[in-house]
Length: 170
Ligand code: ZN
Image 1 (cartoon, rainbow, N blue to C red):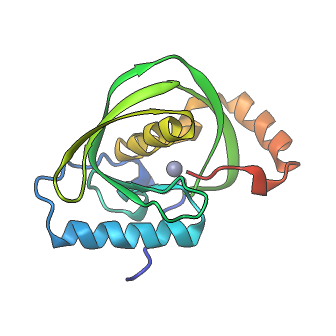
Image 2: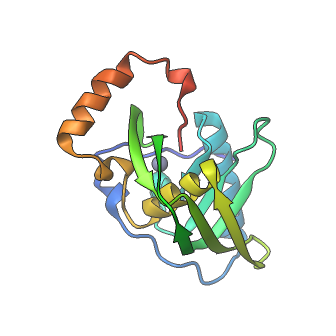
């Protein structure tokens, strides 16, 4: 399986809106496999197709400690959300940069699995953050869009002093 190239900010392709997937064929299955391999190799817990310059609504993620629970989300959408929570986020497309982002605390996400089954999943904590972060990618949005320039600068200085191994990369 070939590893894919992850686009880095400020590549304008990261701003493209991904299209709905109409049929889950072998091209989509292969894309999912390659995205998972790329995500694992780069040390992320989630990856959206937009990040590998494919404008299709597909996301892969694995939040397990042992990296043995891959999940593939086709046409994912947030259909309900509640609460607000702040989390420090990173992104494979914004290397070595972390920022606090406020998002919904709990979400209900609807998506298709690779076998076409419709799933409605309730998520909170890191999974909820990851789903919102990755779906944003499919809409051309990056987590740094949520930060004010001043906040961005301050955070950058502060975070540069911190141990990067403690960070989460989505
Ligand atoms: Zn990201």
